[in-house]
View (cartoon, one colour):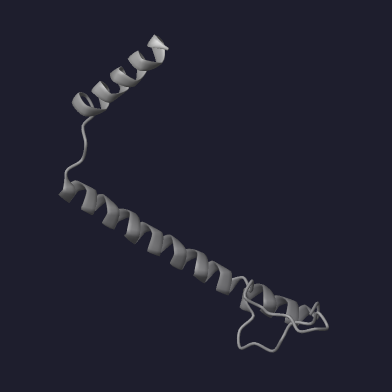
Length: 83
């Protein structure tokens, strides 16, 4: 039991006195960087999804529904007659 108490005291001491915590402005700038990077990655994934035709919806019979743009793969499949 003494080892657990010593471990908790040492952990608390290290967190309070040895860890360098970011300032509020550093934290805000890091959060903005993460937000911008997340938006950029989500836009890249959206564009890839749209271009490769994963957005194609199917009707009850399993045939691709009539959509405006099926993506690059959808265009290729419509040319070769796979869909």
